[in-house]
Image (tube, rainbow, N blue to C red; front, side, top):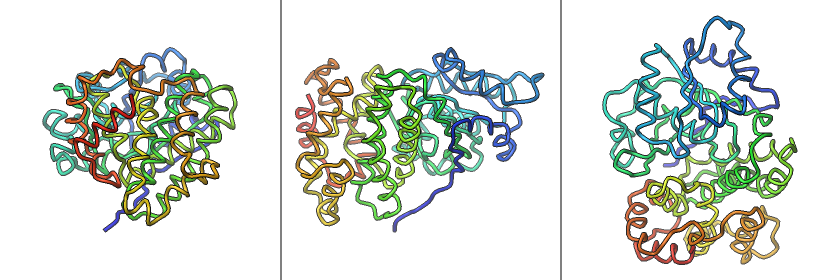
Length: 380
């Protein structure tokens, strides 16, 4: 049976950040913890958010220690601040890292046990309850779509990069203000934008029956493909920023279908080397995984490759992999794992992690250890 479910209230407009106090009131947050990172704070975005609150006598606690790949240690630190300050909700302001960290805090601040207990591969889905603290997500990048996603990707103390997934971690509100992304550097715009493209492609290829999600993903792909270069090359272009932010949340709205081998590989490798950017890894793995998925039963039966080609503006569906490679290169991103320092001696550990990842099970074609080895070699 397929689950078709859309539950986040989304405020989408230039200047939507002004609605932050009203959204706090709507979801019942009276004492929020702001979760962000030092870069976002230094850029002045936190000041913009704080300026929307009329009661300036109350100083809101701010946790700005979010690492590029959020981990269990950061979750513990933020949970300690949440409890010490008597918070009853979280405002996550930043990219996917800050929003995912906020979700981990929302769970661990209201449930007993370490973060590992709530990883989906450890049976965590059944352990997460409605006691989870409410989260309002304010994205400052256009890539992960975590502001509407039902999961968080976090690195455990043991080094595994896992998914904490539950309907209860979906943000109660998403404030999508494309003006907040105007200062995003070009390289980060490109990497996060390719992350959005990967989400739209993988969710569309996933085998679950969910036509609404397929339509959302395809439209998101259409927008991202047409505007990623504009947003990267002309960072102040508001039209480009609007369409990339929309593509990002659209890819995540389709997450309920599941992802695939691109993400099982990037999650595994990102856990091994947290310095590698998730969106860049996705861009590198996409061509090989698309080739691998071409023969999947649902991909063939539903003519998915021709529909992807149409969204990309390609006359020949055989050119999809080449087009993605060329776009990655044109954006100035690495196109091979070798450029990132990945070596073949790392392959066994990457494959082990990929086989255990939650995204492995929703690829349209089942991948074996040998298949993952081929995908890695093809992506070098």
